[in-house]
Structures are given as structure tokens and as C-alpha cells.
Amino acid sequence: MKVIFEEYSGIIITAVAIIALIAVVGLLLVSNGPVHTAFVGLIDSLFNKAKVS
Image (cartoon, rainbow, N blue to C red):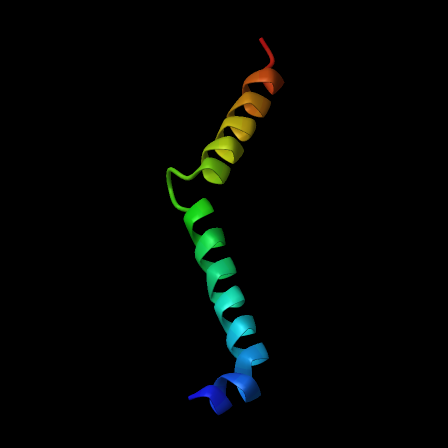
């Protein structure tokens, strides 16, 4: 087991980091996530300000 971690530690760390990054991006982009909410608010305010009376 020690030999495996010595040989492949870089690959294991890289794989875990990529999976964690994908999970964080996925959590931010869900329906009620902070990024989605901010983007929808930005688009709504843009259209509200662009309305011509």
C-alpha cells in the first residue's frame, strides 16, 4: 500500500482535486444556488431597467 501511494500520490491528489472542483461547481449552479440566484437577479434587473414606458 505504501508503494502504491508513493508511486501514484500525484495522480490520486489530482483526481481528488478535479472531483472536488466539479462538485463545487455543481453545487453553485443548482437551481437555488448563489450563482444561479445572482444571475437571475441580474437578468431581471436588466430587463426591468430596459423597459420603456
